Length: 351
Image 1: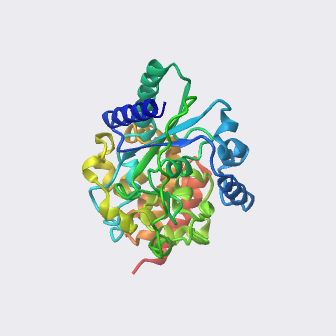
Image 2: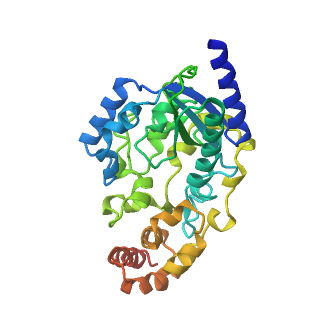
């Protein structure tokens, strides 16, 4: 029986490599009780901000068997999206926008889910088991499961860190009724390093291994729908969609294998260093055209222009005054408020 499980696991691992996954592992479906306890404590503190879906299905998130009572094993997989360029390269280019590495290529949800479905279909054909596949769209704690499956460990920035791929893995999960041979769990190797905590522009980490999403630039520029709180606007700099600072500074990234990067995640030229002036001119139709096939499309034009206005206000670039003024009469209230702030900041910065 153990030999059969081992053969099936090896077969699954080969299938995963053929589908473009760089990391593979298996975990028991039962997460450690402390995982659910930490989640509930974090939610009680409001650390999730406006992400109400995390709270509404917390029990299912904390225990895979609550989501699906028949699940026995979880196959965890990771696709590599390690950047070939320095994520900090635009830090001193205030007239250009910084877009998170993960959003510069094709939408990972589509790429990862299609590969998971192909693997799941093959697994069902081989074993007549039942399966469910997940990529970011269900109450699944991918990072603790990935750690349990040996893909890496949750670092002090709360994201997964891999010895082979650094901080650059898209995660997907296959829940199955099969009782598979589990992988050895990942071990925390952060040690005394605090680089990810120290670099955060908005001090979003109240302590190691704990994130206050309400202060996180990724949350503020992607998930948050209203005006960005004034206390964080200057610290956002020219981040217009997400933030890679805590990921990019991790010393384990020196081992990241960029050659293993899935070709779908190679950056689109127009998203690597977009000019703020061009983004300020986006209407809804142009926004949809520019960001077609990108995860950025999900946030909508209003949030992207709001973010760009914050970056414009931080830029000291006087050539942006007229594009900003044009948005003072925008149809969207949040955009108008951000335009007022940006114009005030640019006026104060005049020589």
